[in-house]
Length: 347
Image (tube, rainbow, N blue to C red; front, side, top):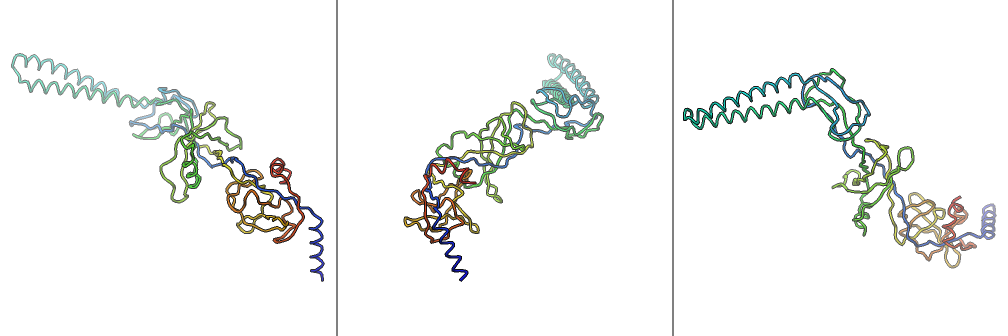
């Protein structure tokens, strides 16, 4: 008797309620997808000592901006200066020997082979001078490009080995931002009609604010990551204010267009386990539970690619008040009106 009474109350309640229904709307739209990204300087290199010796001078500080060719470090040059002086002296000796040998050769006192040998000794001496100059030049370390200095790994007076790390230098005038794209989205991108058009993207920073410059997707890496099924895209962002630094993180915001798709309010859907459903109302005002497939999500909206047509009427509100195969009283709401009042219907 109690069960029968509850059934009658439920039927009476639904009979007195008019449920709002609407239809999917077909239109062009776009969504903004975000991808976790890593931010890299367009040039980021390690500066290392090319010669052994004591670090005599440090001319820059951590975080400083340096210009191309600016002096940064000096390794004690005494030994290399001495080597250069020695090489210069040996070159001078070889020049005198060549001059004397040429005079003797002109008088047929020595053979032409002797003259050629003297010439070769001079060339060898010149090469030794050039090598000594190169070694001496390695003691004076200058910036290879404009950039910002990172942490100094050594201090004045340190004994350096050949190849020892001094610091790193970053050119932050432009930044390369890498982000991973799933295979299906990569295929949509690469097979689209405008695939040869440079795509613009935005960058959301760690403080949840958009970066003030627009980036351009310039390249896609050559192979997929077999573990994740993703492939890396690279966007280039100008960085005129120096806001971005090497090693930062953020999210790339990429707008993806959708042509002629079905859109429904999220409010009209419900989930059972891992599947999404709507209530479709037929011409007799009877509701039918139907599974749908969601291809993308917008604020308060879903894009549906399977399970509905634009002629289907779907229940907009009161999903928890009805059940499958139940007859209800309905009121149709224009789909365009629903879209313009999404926030109201989403409450």
